[in-house]
Length: 254
Length: 361
Image 1 (spheres, rainbow over the protein chains, first blue to last red):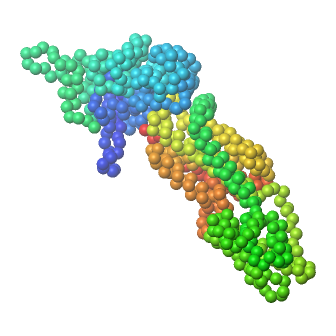
Image 2 (tube, rainbow over the protein chains, first blue to last red; image 1 turned 180 degrees about the horizontal axis):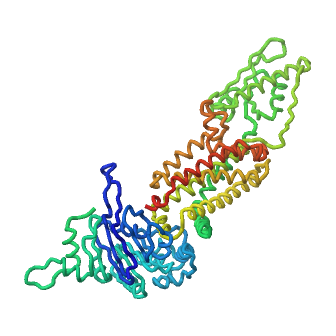
């Protein structure tokens, strides 16, 4: 059963170098995500991944197209949708002067719930940091804390925007375990990443975006079989990074 | 409403823990009040003058005694050259030289006053007193009863000094600073850090967010203003002639005005630098034009009508009328009306400019 379905999503922004002209940051994107999946959105910088997520989360207006989450129209019932989704953003700064326990209590209250902060901290293994300020956490702890903040309403679907960017290998593995654990508990997870190992390890299905469009979609295996360049006489060769570079080219972005 | 209260409690907690901000918001007005409190009392000190007596007769002694009796002056006598040195070094304000032909023989004598006119602001006050003293001495000598005399009767029960003028202005100025910093600067900071964005993926609505911030800030502003009032009343002995409740009505209304102005600014400015520039643009001219440190009446006539319409002018005038003149709310109706108009305009502007999707971006 599809928990999220989007069809023909478009987001236009004014061109910075040509006043009056527009470009489509997201151009006719359609997605179907099944309940219980870990779905990965891949693409170079500026491909439109974050804009797509923000349209699904109700942060950015949808110029045309439609997005349904658990059957609710994101544009028409944004506040009902917000009750059912959890969001971790790329920037994860919080109010100064509040510790983790107080911040979690605030987020919990905003959803009209009363889950104890300790329970949430326990789920991301940060109980001993309850009295710390977010500014004093390590990179991996910060990411785990922002996931805890996204779990306060026990969401059916969790959006993670580049959750492991900038983390060391240990913290990265630790976060992958957390994502898998949440997924095993029945939560649908949608994430963006630049890390091909992560996509291959975590995701049931992937979509690769470039220039605002989805250019390939499938399971990691399917994508490797279809797109990884195969030299003659060598059976199945290459990895997901080869697929990515083959599809989006090797030129540097931004 | 529940979410608004949640946001309010959160902001109260954040504000009360920001010790640095609390310190600096009180530091400036307290320092100003204390400094001017001391300067104000120094104004009553006698003016130090020197008298070089070249005549040395009963008439000159009589004259010197009459001058010394006056509370305005602190008289030093000595030789002309010594005293001249003291005038040059600034120890004496002026030197009065009594010529050797200073006698009661019917011929007019000329007295010389040595003064560094650029240094002495009070010259206009000193000279009439000297002249009056001479007239008195002359009358006594010639046994003339004065035809006219003036009796000064103080009808004001309060001490009217610079401090009591300054304190209401500083209170108004502090309200402006706290309120604009509390809304405008904070919004820009929260947007830059991505906190607004993070909040707006939760079910909290802009009205909850703004409502909570406004209520927390207003409460906080009241506490800070009360502290300043306590310092002014108990440490600096400033008397509040009017009703304390009326005073708080003006304080609350002024807070609303400046919070709304701050919100509008926070929505216009996109970076920390631009909110600083915008903040200075709004607060600095008002600091000098709104009658905080000196009355609006001494500004150039052309500027006065504009200056009187500034929000800070209405706040300062309203507070001053209550604190110094003991006016009732009815008596400061023009100031209240001015503040109400500003509040309405600024509030409409704040709501129109603050769109959370743009703010979140």
